[in-house]
Amino acid sequence: QVQLVESGGGLVQPGGSLRLSCAASGSIFSINAMGWYRQAPGKERELVATIGSGGTTNYADSVKGRFTISRDNAKNAWYLQMNTLKPEDTAVYYCNARIRDTITWVSNDRWGQGIQVTVSS
Image (tube, rainbow, N blue to C red; front, side, top):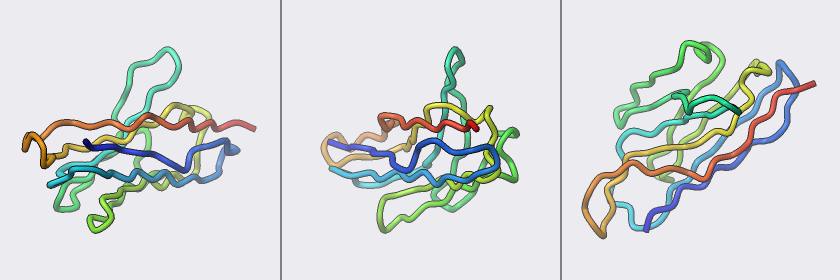
């Protein structure tokens, strides 16, 4: 079984910073693309950032220049450094990855449980 666990969320003032972490564990054979998504109240879940196995990154226009995604393959972990946070960044953030496990040998999208980020004064 594969688990993704997020950490690092919380309450921050506008203009502040937070760093989210996601750690994958369990019967992992390989991890391909990793990413972060978010869902604000009353809105659909949206892509925030992704990073491919080769390190190629992709960002939503709304976070370009403020957020940075990175990965540590040795730790099966990836991160989202969020700077210059705005109230509109308030949402539940979910980590995501395409993982091939050693039980089924099938690649599937896996999701974390979500972590709250609140930007407010």
